[in-house]
Amino acid sequence: MVQPIPSPLWVVSLDDPRAPPTDVWNAMSDAERQAVLDALPSEFPAVEAHPPEGDFHDEEGSRLKRGLRRVFGSGPRQVYVAGDLPVYYPGEAMFSPDLIAVVGVSPHFRKGWVKDAEGGRGLDFALELIWSGSRRKDLADNVTKYARLRIPEYFVFDMPRRLLLGYRLQEGAAEYTPLEPRAGVLELATLGLGLMVEGEKLRFLAATAPIPDPDELIARLERTTDGSLARIRELEAALDAEQKAREAEQKAREAEHKARERAEAKLRELGIDPDQL
Image 1 (tube, rainbow, N blue to C red):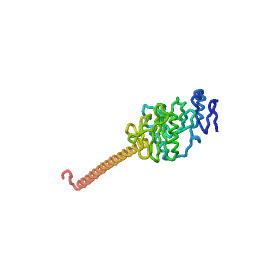
Image 2 (cartoon, rainbow, N blue to C red):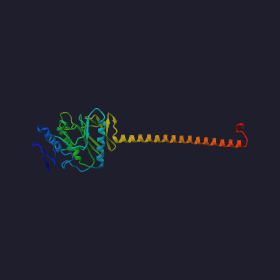
Image 3 (cartoon, rainbow, N blue to C red):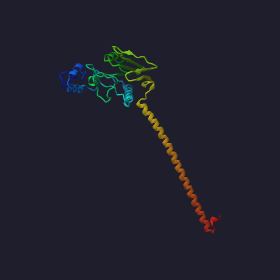
């Protein structure tokens, strides 16, 4: 199935959607370029579809994306972070890493990353997660493909095996150089972070300090809030007990005063002055 667009220079196929080569893109008018962007699908076509890998894969990818967005969301450094986003390089088949980052661009939401539409900016970082999918695709094919596309750093996390691999494209090189971990940590030069396996998940590090992910921060806040609420309840209970003790003491004094008044009245009835006793 082919969807025509109002340009004689490029037609987007929904079965194998591709952005035009750079020379074709440069020859287009602004209207023709926008038509291409509108025609490029944000969902996965059949050529890119892979069997679902379940909650473990999805949760880890979402957690890492939220964590990276939090790291760069409040600082002066702009970094675009996304996951499972259609990526279109000029003339290339669409691909979609589990996590990507591009440094120095606006972090606003996008329906896809089209390199030429982003001023020729390609991905700086890509990460793939393996749970039950194709190991050949992530551990072999993408190592060759992402190096050819000049993506500076590529990482693969084999979740069942708890194996993290990293690759960096050295200046002028055509192939990736595998990264060697230091104390179990792989360096992300593009992002200025570290990456390591902790238990069954990945952990980003700033210098040597682990960066808590949003779920951990929420849990920590909940524990703090729960502790504060418990302390407030203890204080309220203590104040309530103190108030009740004061009220009981006041009632006892009032009862004692009334009993004394009754006794004095009885003495006066008998002709005895209680003040003389």
